[in-house]
Image 1 (tube, rainbow, N blue to C red):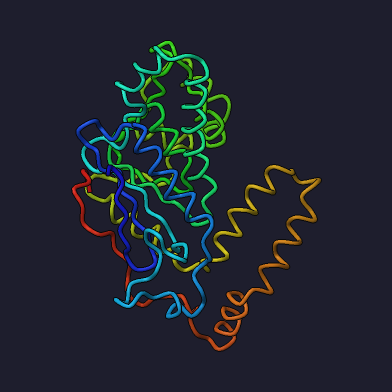
Image 2 (cartoon, helix red, strand yellow):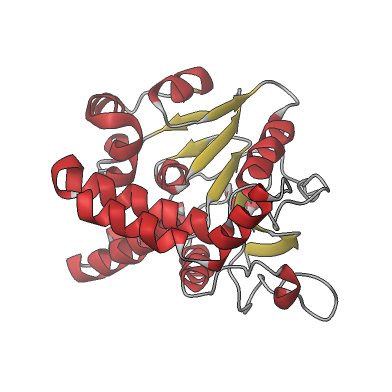
Length: 295
């Protein structure tokens, strides 16, 4: 299997591990990523008393088949390339298939990206190397993107007689219509500095600092309530979709809902007692080791 899952405290680390094909999206990889993120969406948030979510071995029940969703998900890849996009062999097969088969494959790919985007747990991408085509779409689907300075991105579809179809809403949402129009049409390479400037990358790491920056980002997320982070993601989607004029009721309902939840009640009590929130951990979170390229 090209997708591995590892529990690291409250964090689920998902690794794309198929460097022989530059972590390209074959059918199995698409299905496995969809399964990971779709499954998380139907789980309960971690309880305030995290002891109720522990397995007999002391780990949290947030891994494969777990009851609870992780506090944060880190998405990373092994090797020198984060993701090269569609698998060339399967892309050639689809070129010989009919319209309906191509439509079904495209819908499956799009559903995978949407599962990442809609995941209630924050998803942090660790981008250690280049991403092309659909690989850039996967980056754009994540909530926060931490990348090495030397990364490169490109929407190479038009040079293959194709279009960046199912990734286009995610990319346009991230970098805007003007930048998307430029890079979709030219297929020019986007370096790390430009990717950061246009919003494709949120945090750009200098040489050797990728994991330092990633870990700092995850630690910040772990200070937020696990349930509140999911609600906040829903709030962002809803407020943008409805716009300022029509979003009044939604935003009021969501803050009212958050206030009545056990998580907010516990955090407020901790604040009044001048204590840390119940989920604040004294131990600093760190990324498990892997063969994952530039660190």
